[in-house]
Length: 148
Length: 195
Image (cartoon, rainbow over all chains, first blue to last red; front, side, top):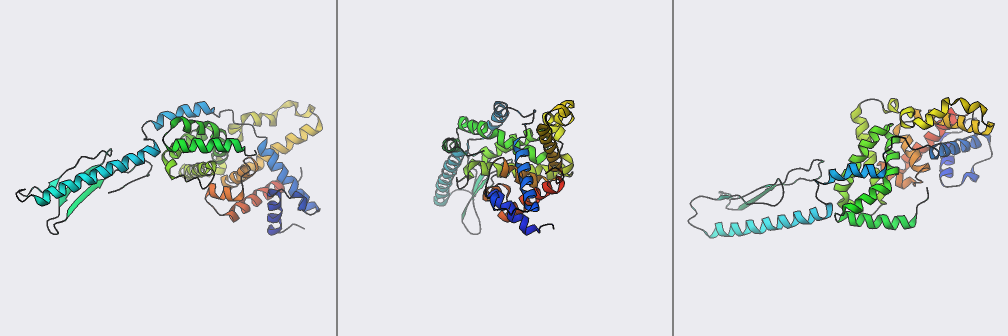
């Protein structure tokens, strides 16, 4: 009689936990055990594909592609520092605009940002009188980051 | 493949240095995990050329996302997860049934040659029988889906736990157990005359 799926799953788990001895001494259970052994031995005996590049070849292909990418740890700190600089500059500009009475309507300013590809702008909202700071950071190619 | 505690410590060091932007340390990780990652990708996509292309993508993604690796799981589990999702995305884009793409003659030409080697009959019975089992096993493997092949590979070759496989493939532990059970049952069913 063919064992039910639950029984086979129990046998499969016993095999994975190194408890093959726990399987009953029945033809079905022993056949399943031999199938487990065949699968394990078959996979472990598989030769590496002959077209597999060496690790050195793989690294030689990967490394140049990292060149345009900032190192992950420092990139984060660098962006944080750039953003801080921008905020300080914007605050200074806001203070200056706020205390200047004879600005003559020139209430829009652009601020240079060190973040590559980022655009920034500071202006006073006419209705609310609030200073608005915009920082637009482009998406990374893999969708890794964005902001505004 | 039993884990080597010393290698584990080295990997932790390399990961930490790579997180700080050390490319040489990242290169060591590539050298250390290349064989395993390539094996996984070949299992999933079925040929070495695509696996090589995908492996490059996986390493570049890993470099960019290293900051998000918190060390709560093993590095290779995290790496396998990127690899699994990259391969699944590739298979989806390929828009053809992945089963039909699996070609052991392309992926493993050396092994495939054994099937037609004329000297098989002259070998000792035991060796010929083992070759028969191997050949039939690889035929069975072709009938399995990439997810079932991958689960079996991670368990039997990489000795990964259910939890690690679940984390690497983005599914539940119960699903991993089901995939393993199904794959083994398929082996048993299709090889019952040999086992």
